[in-house]
Amino acid sequence: MAHTDMNERRLERNLQRFVIFRLFYSARFYYPVLTILFLDYGLSLEQFGILNLVWALTIVCAEVPSGALADIMGRKRLVVFAAMLMCVEMALLVFVPIGSSAILFPVFLANRICSGLSEAAASGADEALAYDSLKALGREGEWAKLLEKTTRIVSLGFFVTMIAGALAYDSAFVNKLLSFLNETWQLEQTTIIRLPIVLTLFTSLVVLGTALGFYDIDKHNPVERSASSLPTPQRTSAVSESFAQIIRAGRWTVTHRFVLFVILAALALDSVARQFVVLASEYYRNIELPISWFGFIGAGMSLLGILNARLARYMVSRLSPFHNFLCLSGLLLFSLSGVMLAIPYYGVLFAVGAFAILGIVQFQASYYLNKEVDSKLRATVLSFKGLALNLGLGVASLLYTVLVGVVKTGQESVLNSDELQRYAFLESLKAFPVYYLFLCLGIFLLAKVILKSNSKLFLRPI
Image (cartoon, rainbow, N blue to C red; front, side, top):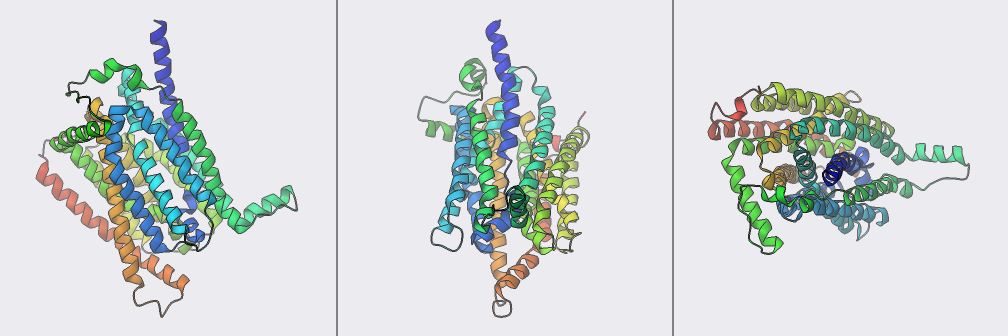
């Protein structure tokens, strides 16, 4: 009895650590100034696009193998590995020299690869660990409630992070604050540029400590792991086992067409919205917003995430999955159509829709997939979702980089470098709603071809 009580307490702590892990893993102080931080370090807009492409492709290559390894070797090991890589990626940017140099792009390239590997390792593994902890407690029906709670807390953390990160990047604010404390205290611009990175390095250490404290349910609950009706892989190397797991999960996903649709629909929505979001700080600068406002805008977007979680939970409990996709598509198209106008100051209102899409899509995809997937395949199938989302982002980043290059062609002799970058950015925004419209039509055709009218996709929840 005492042993059972101890296990229950450890499983409960897993749920708490899942929330803390998500909170600090997403608490990245450089998010409100992401684009301009990379540009101020000395990179060009095209290099920024290439780095986003590399980041997405790294996740694409590592996502599914890491999910399979999480199912085979244990979720905790992958979560710890993700936390360690987060520490490395932040340390690289803390120490790289600022300004044009031979090592600048290679170091940022290494940063993006470490970041992609970290995202891939964490994706699915932390969710699977939390869901299986709930299942071991006999409370898997509370998954939607836990997701909403996590989203709410992460949104509040994001609120603080966005404000602090933008203010830390504002040299006037930082030096004014330092002079208030001591008249002789002042920081160079190159030091201030690094402050959001340094703050994120500290949060990465918290993430690592949290990950190390997880209760390894895979190791301590062998009965749960063997309870699945799926065939047990032979005792071969972890690599061959992971490939066998990928094949099993792939076959399962293809034969469960509703799951396949959920993943592809999430790909379409997330890839376009996220491509705009990673460029958001440059968009804010082009609609004439002061840098000091960026954090408050990001904070507002994070608070919106609390409402998004409630809205997403309401939608999955009242509407069919297909109707949810229609609603989100309409919201995204409206948002992108407004964004391309780049209206000074008020254009920020149209950005709200793109940010809202990210949270709602993640919530709904996680809700639908975890309800459908067998425990032995959960992390792998969830990694398929991550693979799809980042493959979509990779394609969007590649197309964006090519588009910027095409737009700049012939304008170099007419505009100076700053004017050229502004012109290329504003022109590229016009392609976003057109690109999503084509993706949306493709998803509609897919639903018509592979799914029957009475499938789960079209049924309202009871």
